[in-house]
Image 1 (cartoon, rainbow, N blue to C red):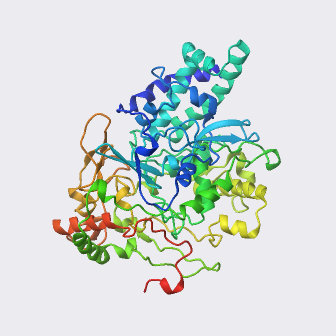
Image 2: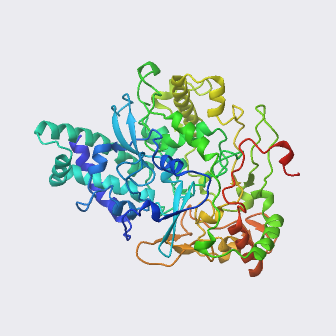
Length: 585
């Protein structure tokens, strides 16, 4: 173990170089944040920000007292959290007594799972990537369920790894940590070191395998699908041959209307919310035992928090898209927005849908779902890397004898089938422990008909645009800085731009002014293309999705996108509106 730690320590020094220097500030007081009407109470928000989804990274007491790699500042401090784009919170909420940033929660592991003993841990929750704050002229506007446009998750993971490595290799650092935790005797220090070393190795593996890339993703972008695949098929079962390089970063999608939509994820790959939400936790540190020989020994056991995932899905089902705050960002030109609405209906609504939305026919449970456009990548022409990032085949290793009959006993199988088989086994074991009634099981699966239909191949999902103004940068991979540039010919878009932290209410997006703390996004790099979804002269297809617009038309469309939803706090009814309120087809 000590040899491994010494070897890993060298890698940690290399990782520090990607950490971006940024200005930082203390957590703003709760009453200084502007909350928009999204139909949630403050209690809803406080719970969402810090509920436990079952993920664990580091013992809670260690996380509260760990220092950064290059100094004695605490890693969990507001200043350091701000450095990586986390949204800091003051203490006071019953769900967050220690004043942790949004998306970091305290998780209790009640019984040992694999290498994780029972105890209290710090871990991420979905709000880390699905809540944002728009900064404008000193004001902070909170958007719940939006894309975390300042979060640099890759750099944060790497900085945590560097902090852990530095603490294990620097005797003075370790002694300070031990003193904070009351580990004074040699025996207590030895127990702390053993616990810390074991957890540090897991983070090192995550930082240097699951999130390892040739160039950094930067803020607002994560290759979540590759990271989930790597953890489930490579890291946890100990089969490094199955690792895929995460070269297809995307911005986290916004979550309002997600429970109501027919398909979710950028590539429209899943319908069942339980499989979607539990799959996400599998990618971010949920303890899972994939090394036991047989299920009787704990194989497929996990720390799944299904009741909490059930609640968050229900709560997201009543989350309203945010309305443009005219008192902060300026008045909407209603006449211009009206012209933009007509243009949207002519050029965009066939894919993106518009309120009151087009719905599916009722399924066997009587539920309708919002139709989302499924546009072939070859037509829309946007970056294609997501469909190619994950390796095609997987080595099954010791799990080969525990796969479904069609895969059982094979040394190598399609990776996607391997991953889904593991996820299904983990899910079924977790659900079985709860002894849910048929009605409860139906609810937790979002009233979807199972098995779900095959996912469409190589498409991008075009969901309704209500509230999209609050979710820069744009396109699935965050390669377009503002809404205005979404409406020009793709060749005229910025090829390099700085990703800053200030909102631009004119072009509606991120301020691209370069300066300290900004990140330069180069759209010429693999996975970063901002081609496609182009409005230009020529036949439709191959990246052209609409006609060349005049500048007046572009600004009218921007104004319309600022204006929706037209009713603040409007929640899309789950399961569909009453029959008499359905839109005409």
